[in-house]
Image 1 (spheres, rainbow, N blue to C red):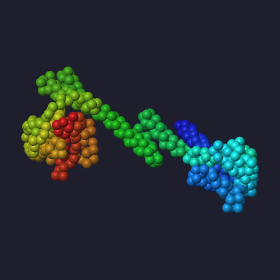
Image 2: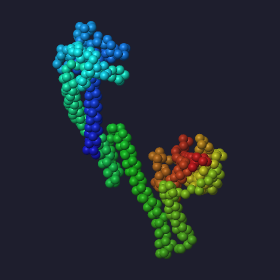
Image 3: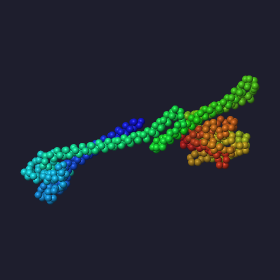
Image 4: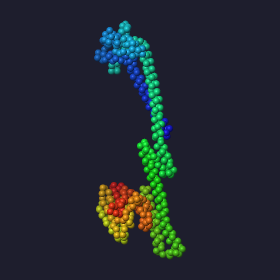
Length: 465
């Protein structure tokens, strides 16, 4: 990659330098031709300006002889409009100015300070002529006496452009060398973080999820490095959860299977009589297994987005009231008082059975962890376009260290709880997944007055789509 970057930089640099060199040469050539075309080699620029201004005012060359350096009317005493800057020095340039001729647009000489007999004749010295223009139209010419003037102009242009080319070449070589050094440095600083990311990606692909990168600049690559580290961290945590999940499933399945096997072997060996009571014990364990498998299937479908929902408009007031009635007997067994504050809220678009399952899990959890003689608070209200249902118990609450994991599968805040007290460990995970597939949320916290509080939030009506 570094080689490709360097070659790309060199290509861009070469194209840029070539373009600049061509542009400089063209502009320099154009300026030189403009300079020479207006008599710059002999210092005739001012004379050209004066003559063009004269013609602009008078629209003819009548009387223009007075402006010519070699005329008797020249007020400068023969110094002309410029000091001369020809290749032969100031004196040669001034001599050329003093002997220069003036011709009209057709090339007819109207002023010649050296050969007066040439006045009225047509000049053939077109190559050395200096055009006089008005609005882009040639209106006359200045004609040097020497035939060598055109060759001197060409020689001057060639030497000047040669020097420009040499200077451009030297500048291009220096600039190219400096640019190459910068390209090498830039390629190094660009490829270094890329190589780190490639090496880290390959490490993660090989299964090393602990691989991290340390990139602090440039800031774009630093952000990419932070994103990679977060991704690797999430993958590592997901892999850890997967392994724990596999272990937990095996653990949860082992107990009911072992109980069933022990009862069956005992009955086969004649230790336990084949009575209804002994068969019911096996049936209870079988129901527990079925429930566990069904819970796992439900979670898998929800994770894959394949859980089918029978969406309809559901009255949360009626659903919660029905579930409270179902748990009334269990609450009375533990002398738990259920206090409810239920408002009639707008309907939600949901699967009634799935919403009922969420409320059942929350109430079952509340009854399980509320001590005998305690209170279970259930509230339903409408706020901010959401239907909010909260269930709070008066138990010991959730340990702060357990709050981030309370919705994890098979997680129990107290590992010492028995299966009967703690269930399968999937109820809260299922409840949260069902809330999310309805575009809602389910959260847990400890209430300031004591006990744990679970809050279910669902969008109303069409917002749930």
